[in-house]
Amino acid sequence: MFQIPDSLIVNFSISRQVYRQGLNYFSTGKIKSVRIQEDKPIIYGVVRDSQDYNVRIVFGEDGVFQSAECTCPVSSHYSGHCKHIVAVLLHLKWLKENNGFRSFEEKKAAREFFRYFPSSSSVIRTMSAPFCLYESGRTGHMSYVISVNS
Image (cartoon, rainbow, N blue to C red):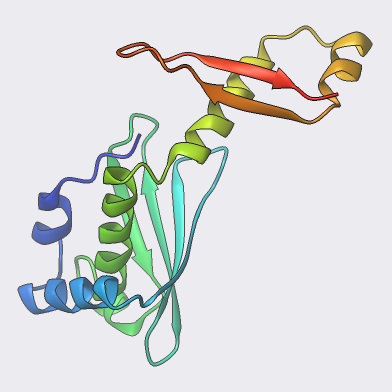
């Protein structure tokens, strides 16, 4: 999914102090929300500070970091990640390490699976029922089973 090495967070921070502030924001729960755009690898975050600041982080289709921006004044005056971007990147790294992207990955797998069905009224009628996506339990093998609840 997303490649978030420590070097991306530490080395691209404006300074070591800014990195420590971002780490503190992450650790103390200043992140209000994080949202992944479903059709593109773009992350939107909101971080609490003297006011709420919006963070946007873009990854390539291959999961490699491309860019980050924040609405705070520091971000517009300096080159590198501000404390708000650092906090969101640390949160994303934590999510990745703790299986927090599972539902996003399942939705993406389901969309790709259904894309292969021919467009017909029988498929549409069948798929209009609620469905669940389950991960196969075999070790070393990843497969998905679609269960249609009628």
